[in-house]
Amino acid sequence: MSFIRTLQVIVFLLFGLASNAHGHSSHIEYPRLEKVNQNHADLSSQTVYVCFGEYAYAYHSRSDCPGLSNCKGSIKYTDESTASVNLARVPCCRCWSNVSDRCKDDNPYYGNSGGSGGDASEAYAIVALAVVATSALILSNDIYFHGVQSFHQYSVPDPQYWSPNYIDKQGYSFGLRKTWPKFALEYGASMITREYTDLNDYKWENELWSGHVNLVRQIFPYSAPTWADYYLGPSLVYNEGYYFGGVCGMKMRLTDRLFFDVRYQLSRNTNHIGAGLIFNYQKKYFWNR
Image (tube, rainbow, N blue to C red; front, side, top):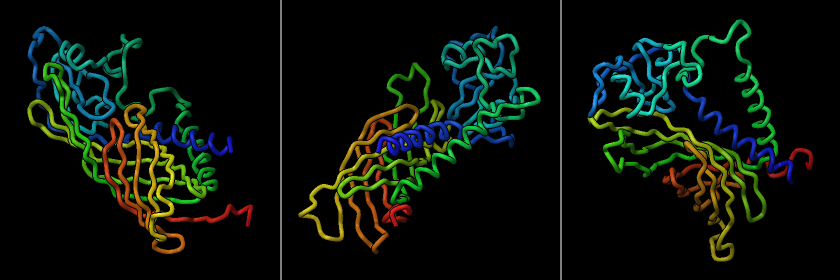
């Protein structure tokens, strides 16, 4: 059993890594440039360009820098002092060659900047993910898919520190389940569309990926109808960090292997209701048949 649990934890961690690497592209599309709202602009500083999207950390010396080609939000310009102090950004490794000890690359997958051999770490990660996902598929019993409506939103408590407000909207969730008579261990991922609004009421959207592990237990086994199961349990969510939460729901039998499932999941960065299907693709492992 410890071997199975180890594989399940690895799957969850790899889902988290995949969510960080999601969305990289070599196709360049530059949004309309706007100026960042500056309360104390340093007129002597260089003009720099900043991406307001997920996983953007750097400021750039030019608007056509390849580091901006993967920007999923708006690109705005400001002075270097504001970018560094107010927005907590660091120099782009492509734009400045003398800051190797404190620079970031917002798009490390653009081109090949590492020599003739390239970096094989991404290929190794893909192979590892494929092996672990295949193992999890063999050792699990069910597969599930839900449409999701999120109610999570965030408003900046202090407008002196610039950060966009956001609201999470629709998306979907999917994964695998390892089942026992009264328990199920679920491990999967979800995607939610997140809408951001900055201080100038400019709006943009990103796809937010997260991973989750749920341990659910059947409740009210004797009072529930024969065609329904109620469940409740703790949840561990990877969503820009690791957070504990909970999940509850009801599973209704449609056929011998197909179930309709309605659930509610809550954590610090998760607040959504989902509805979808659970399919039991193996009642017994193939080596027990």
